Length: 234
Image (cartoon, rainbow, N blue to C red; front, side, top):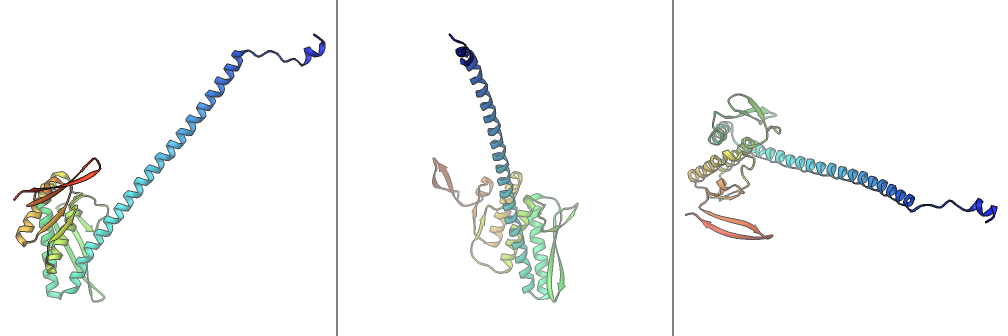
């Protein structure tokens, strides 16, 4: 072996050195993959949270629009009546809504309408006195059952005073009312139907409300196929 061979010949590399190098690279790649996965999971979690917030905001907007629509019906009814009749309508609506709240929730709730004239037009403002606080309505921060019952009672009162005939269709009425008050909602609707001779066609997921019907139709989802069946309690 000559001098040249000694200068250019590399030192031998052992198999253990190669194995250690591969393990180091694998560990780095694994760490990079874990970091990337954590980032992706974090972004997915943020996206899911934003989607839920968007859905909640859309739902709140729909509920707010429904509230405005109900109070708008009352406003139109008040504008269509004479001064004397207007006071009668006001008193009747106040009584119906107050009675509905007290039947469902108990206590001494009072629904109040404050009438004033602006530009020769009657303008109504609405308040709820629950026995301890006076709240101006619609109150979008007041969630839950009382808003549902107020809206329901307003629809019933306006419908009767407008003389609207035919059955009453209700979809998921009182869905924000706590379960403990559901039987009281059912009782209120049954008494309304009996007193005014009004047929009610009700769509609900609540068993207490479904039981007030003389005839009920249930729809069950079995292996992604819906099967309706009748349950007659005459």
